[in-house]
Image 1: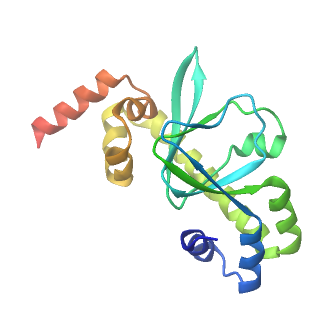
Image 2: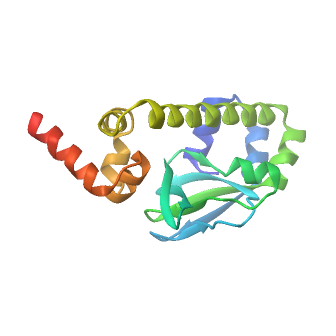
Amino acid sequence: MTELFRQAMLQMIRFEPHELQLLGDCLEYLEFPRRAIIHDIGHVWRHTFFIEEGCLRYYHLVNGEEVTGQFFFEGSWFSDYESFISGEPSRLCVQALEKTKLSVMSKKNIYRLYDEIPRFERLGRLMAERAFIGLRMRTQTLTHLNPEERYLRLLKIRPKVIERIPQHYIASFLGIKPQSLSRIRKRLQSHS
């Protein structure tokens, strides 16, 4: 278990040392090069990922065009919970945008830990609550803010995205075309 993973766990739940050891024993470690597809559309999710290093994005296809749903950086968890829980094929594709190292836990091990470590089940609930809040905030941002406001909000609360993600993926995430993002950025620069 890496120190980043250990600290992330302890920030959410106070695990005993033997419980952390059980968690660590359930992890696998994977590395992916930049631009690698980590999980493709149509496959069932049977794992959850903790990002040790690098950056992931997930996207889905709308009329054959990639639409970016979210970005995840070091210290974040990611899984397609809908597919993970239902056992249905995923409609999401996950791509490494940088060289990426992941700690990976299987669904089988997660459910085993739910049974063996009651605190781990609480961790699962807290993570599901955070995922719900994140999804709700994302929906509200897309439905209540105009493109410039969405960009300014992203700039304020997630500067890593602006610093590390290519412009065309940011535009897709904001629900606009790359040319529109360029105009927004140019307009904001001329006002500063």
